[in-house]
Every structure is written in structure tokens, then in C-alpha cells.
Amino acid sequence: MSKVKEQWGLPEGMTSCHTAVWHGKYVFEGHVPARLINKFLADPPEGSFGLTVPGMPDGSPGMYRGGEFEPYNVYLLLSGGDYRFYTRIEKPEDD
Image (tube, rainbow, N blue to C red; front, top):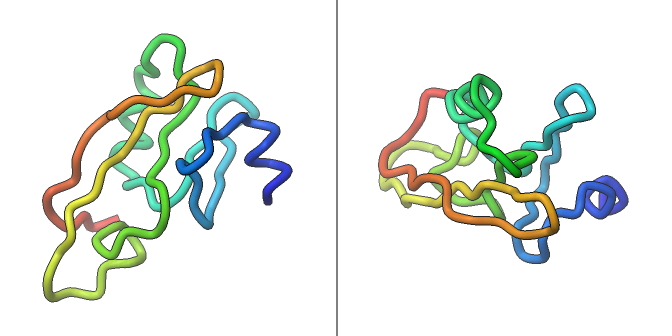
């Protein structure tokens, strides 16, 4: 998977355990909530090529086991190897 991450130019520190490529055009790295993937695909911000949730936050989809929730950030992946804040997840997601 490191070759795939490298091919897409994912910035150092912005990777996770899962990488999904959509139609060879966009990449979604880590435990990105499905609703945010759908929102992104409906209207991708100019100059971007995907979303990432670095690491494996306890509150992210597939990592939340109930109990206390730990908020986490989602970042927009930008062409040229940069990234910027996209949104903060403050409560558990269904998917």
C-alpha cells in the first residue's frame, strides 16, 4: 500500500491504514465518513483530489465502540502534496 500512497502523493503524516481510489481520479485515505465522501464526490473543491483522516482515531467509522467519543479532523488533499482542514467530526457517525 505504501506504493499506492506514494503514487497519489499523500503528504507525510496524513496517511492511515486504508486507501480507496475512486475511478482513478480521487483518493480517500483512512476512516473517512461515507457522508463526507458523498459530499466530496458531489462537488469536489477545486485543486483537491480527496479526503484523509490520518491515523486511526477512536471515534472514526469502524473504530468507535460506544462509550466516550474522541472528536477528530478530516483533511482535504490538495494537488502538489499539500492539505488543509476540511471539517471536524464532533459526534459518532453511523457509517
